Length: 275
Image (tube, rainbow, N blue to C red; front, side):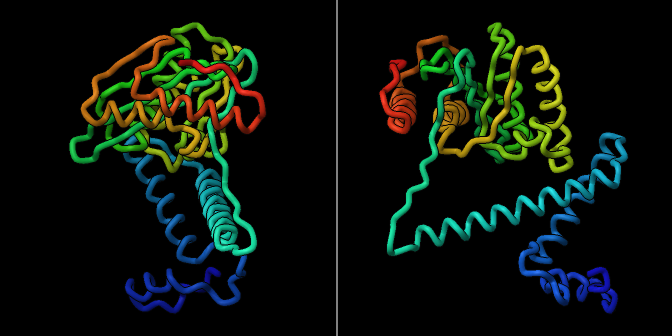
């Protein structure tokens, strides 16, 4: 593998070899172009951390981060191909069902999301709070500034953690559809792939989370995060910041009830509505 670039005479040849798998490259491995791209990206992130944070990363940490993203790429690619095969099957139609779910008894769940406009750096944050019956206990839509979509997602999760603390909850769960952020919060990734601003926000959230009796962070599909998404988009597209307790605005009634209907249908008897 490491002799793949030895015969390059110039930078152009070196770069073109990114797109050619080395001899005897196993089929089950990620493509060579993926290996080159991910490795270069993580090295660049390590250099950024040294320049902007004065943090010299451990080489082992960088290697583990590269392996993590390559494994994730391989899993996503396999899932995508398997799903395509399912959808193209003429013998049987399969539907992937993804929806919001009830938290455990005694636990309150905060779903968070963010919407971002790169043109003017305006961002909308959405937070929705529900209990184990699906009852909407509160929500927030926040208009603010952010440096990137990732930064906005970090602001959303930190806002939710702070709000949970302010409300005095002891057993909490936070869901979001940003996989890189939720993986970092769960200790599944080192954070080298995250911007330093985002990482600082998440570290602050983790520090606060230590004071809860129990606290979980979970990644969910966007289809399971529709209410928070609706609130975030409203805040990002001209809506004003808003907060309420147990009295949600009318524009999210339909999506709240869709969540209740979906989860109730999947487990049998219907649950009480929050509207």
